[in-house]
Length: 507
Ligand code: ZN
Image (cartoon, rainbow, N blue to C red):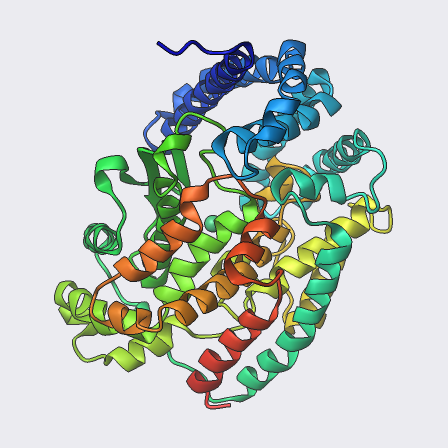
């Protein structure tokens, strides 16, 4: 019988400690899922407390000095293992998480999350009443706390760097500003050319579509695409999201509107992309912190790839449109697949980020990213924020929001999180998804024909093999370089939208 050496025992202890932290986090996520789906409204105060208690215990375990000592003791062990082995990857990731958590005092984290919960409540009410004055003092405190959080990580180049590192580790403000500037230069003339072209009629999507029938359609479609209902489920919630408690229990939610087919369909395909990612992680990583998505950008890329590159393509609807027509014959019977394809890809300069098309979407992100930096660096006060917001919408998109609810108060992020580090992941996701899909098509040029025939396995398999199964073994930059052979670039995305929308709008 083989006995474990002393160092192997230490590694087993590390795994067991990290496993407990994962369990606590999964339990608090499950409470959150319930809160967002089936919990009666009366449960809210107790639920907030229960989640906070679990988070506090997991934070204590994560910042336990004994965990720090174990990570020190395992340095030689880590060096002897291959870089991408589960062992070395786990130690590397755990060390990063440990160091990040140790930088920030627990009392500060408690104050921040209390403030965030309070602000969210105020915002939810104020937004419907279009009352920016009501959230202003809360947002001012959020700005102070965001600065304070960043300052626990001295030595940064720009103040947003440590905040970005929380969700998109490995990139920084300077790199992003440069990418965004290049992208903006490509987007503005394209948007102007589209605005001058003959407009697309998307009336087909705005009829009366029974919501239960929409849900049934989405369920059948995502099962066909590869979502595993034995290891997940689909429910309804006001804000669609995906959440996993294990590789074998990854759930998504959908939101439908009777008069807008876009919302139900594409939010479902989007969330399914997030869910396929987590369902596709290698089973050997189950129960460890490696069993998750690498970064906000890489996670978003998986969602956008299925939502946009796949589900907004003509090939996709060659296969699915007869299904959709079958359940909505009265509404779609007279509408051709081509007309439908145009409608779901309509470009319009609208004030709302979440409703934005593929061409204008990134401008919404850049506006927020720039404003965050200006606020954190003290060049823009919260008092002047609404005006600065409207001004940027005027100059970038040629529109002015009619009120704060569709302007500066539209997104939940600043009102439930920090200012800074919250938005870049969306544009990173769009760029990464195009870069990955271009590579997938180079290796498997048959993918579009497969999609047209309702065979999604070739693409799904490629993603599992190259992205999903690795979990968090690599950083986003490492994996992108490994899979596509180049660092992150705007070029694949620009090629993709130029070709697709150039054809759609006959530019
Ligand atoms: Zn997403």
